[in-house]
Length: 217
Picture 1 (cartoon, one colour):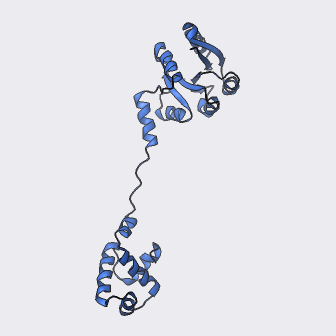
Picture 2 (cartoon, helix red, strand yellow):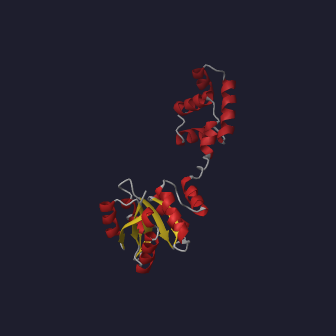
Picture 3 (cartoon, one colour):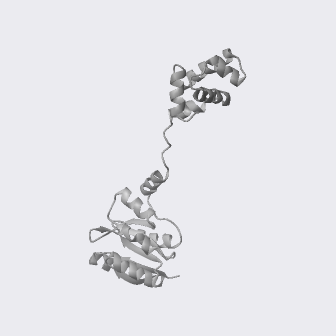
């Protein structure tokens, strides 16, 4: 199967070398076109639907990441980045934008050809450090624990009922609250003592403020 390749690079010497490299591979590779800027590359890609775009990451001082998604929009073209840029964040951004391979401009020509074949076959061509950078971005850090949510989570259903009565009672005496809950005043006091400890409050007034602030009514 012939792999149809579009070259995108703004360095004429680099383009000339890549063209000769592809032509030397005979019938397995076919050069369908060359471009030196994003507008030309996007237009050629839309018209020619190449299998692979060998793309320089930096074109005339601008990043190719900006138009990379347009190159793969047809669903059949795959992009291999050919770049001197070693910044892992930039390379990871290129992969997230749609690139499926990254090859250094300093890599041996055999690596460039192998990357094209692997990516054309549906594989990724990324070095280990870049893979680690990508995984680091994809794995979100664990959310910080909310101490108040943890405290509230220790409350039993009965304790939450007692807190609700305190808030709704607005100053009612313990005896009156106990009667509403059909429990003894001593049992109510025991519940309150446990609640104070769990929520780190000192009295009913602080409990009222805490419960109102955190929606425990």
